[in-house]
Length: 390
Image 1 (tube, one colour):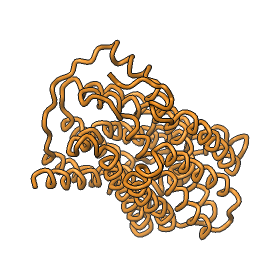
Image 2: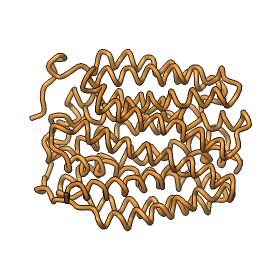
Image 3: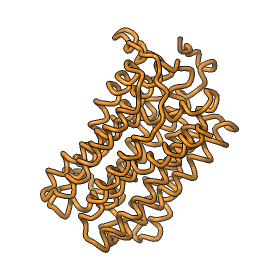
């Protein structure tokens, strides 16, 4: 009973966390353009979220393993998320949005410890189920918050979703004080041990595919698809519906993929299928000239993304000792943050040469190449002759 209650509190807290970081997502790119940002600057604003995570997730994972605690990092993440939301609300210049969205990435770096702590509420053999569940909660939060964000912007002005972001973070901070944690033995990981994690072929393979998949997703779903929709004439409310459509599909796919398909077909096949779906959707977007079809493509792309991430997250810590899971998850999430940062930044710069439509074609091609790489790299350890964790 106590364990069930702990899971519920953690789930609600997680819902607030991701809501605070995503409630303004439908209007982030368009708002930056409204404040005079070029496509290059829009790309940098979106990528600043991943840039912070690229540098912070490994240190956070190592630090939390070293002290055997996760909760303090979670509480601090809510404080930073509140600063990010209120800062974006106050920003009157697109350049300031770059800083405050980057602070959102600092907060999101704590996702390392969120996932490890939530998995500790489940038996070791239920890791895929735990990650599938918390990922579904994440996507549900992102769906509800982006829908609400579009409504708030439409009714109360474009600054309202950013103000709401700060409030949601404060509510989450209160909930985080109620989270239960069983302290783990302190683990003083050495530099040699940390470097050995980066040499593990299994972890490297999973992380590489995650980098490329996040590249595709952050360029399209979280980046330039809302900008494309705004150019088709979408209102703030319609932009909220567009993002919510993707997140509904993500939540459904994360449950289906983690709880059913991963066990039946294998996690590698689920990842490859998701990559194919996301890539084809990216290629189709520039061929669409009305919002109705764009909603359909956005839902399909969201479903594909919902298949990819939970399976990769589960694979990243399979066979890892409990005392090293924070570090392993930190390495994985920091690595895939490279795609979150590099995708929008690089695509924004390329837009000067190939235009907005060209961005989607190029991104779809990268996704198809990633699916081919995944077919080779994501075999089981025994199948691929890869060493197990020691």
